[in-house]
Length: 317
Image 1 (cartoon, helix red, strand yellow):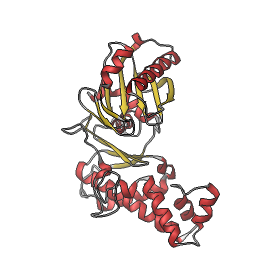
Image 2: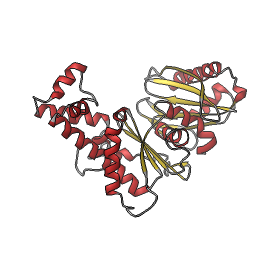
Image 3: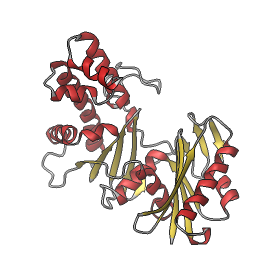
Image 4: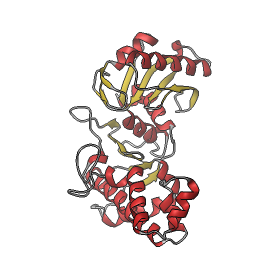
């Protein structure tokens, strides 16, 4: 049998048919066009599901379950309690999908949890039962899997590693706290740190690189570092220390088999991963244990959340 995975994002809605070996065999997407009503958005979700089945040359009778990853908080009844970037408040997502696609098992979870599930079973996790996925993007997203189950917490909002504080009274975070890991380790934070360094160092090669690219990006400081630029080297070194601080906290608190790191910054490859592993190995609490957490790069890219959503019915519940 096959399952359908849906990635509901602020920009696009993507649906895919996934086989029992975690392969995508049919896919479709459409713009989310938010803000608009949940009814309109779910009409389009159903449409891309049907198109994905057509692409796979299958029908709904071939589908064992449907899973959806969404921003925000999802309760145990498949209700999206709150998703600010979609304007959703208490949207009965599971029921709305069944109304449009038939009486088939439907599972809904947070998108970061789905991405963690996808990487754990079909990506770099290789079936790990104790696994954490971290995405360094606009924010710092994360999902935690313990004993093969997604950690949701008493209110279904668990696993938000990006909002643990690594600097008391530090940089303000969009969540309202100060000093969150997200405020230092996200791609947004790296860009802010790069701009601040550029202001202090008008002769830095980062100015030339940003002008050539047309903007300051997450690559600017790394490219400057490779050219031997002193200011760029400091930005990169500080940023890696911030990322490592959060990873060490995760490792010491949970001792997972693997922490998977994803997001565009991970395109830096070993330039990022090697020093992260050095920091973690140097500061982990379990210094004498034979079993140690591995820090690995995510493998599935944008497909992690889709595959993870498709697995919700067979693994997560």
